[in-house]
Image: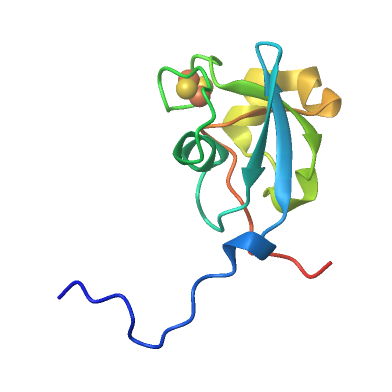
Length: 105
Ligand code: FES
């Protein structure tokens, strides 16, 4: 069946906080999608991010967070290993960064 009007309410995507990222001199606003990676969410929302391995190895998906970093889970081992001191400057691997559950503001 493909009837969408079943009385269910739509997800609160419009109320989702935004993360602002920069890669290769371009900035993108990405709506937070709980449990998705930043890369998956960004690509599905039209951001033209560069990436390659999806494994946290190549570093091609590196982005700098400009706003909304609290919406992401803490960096994992691969991010810490690959980015090192750049983490403190707001860089993350988009393929390894995932959104936490939406937080109350
Ligand atoms: S795509 Fe290679 S580290 Fe993310």
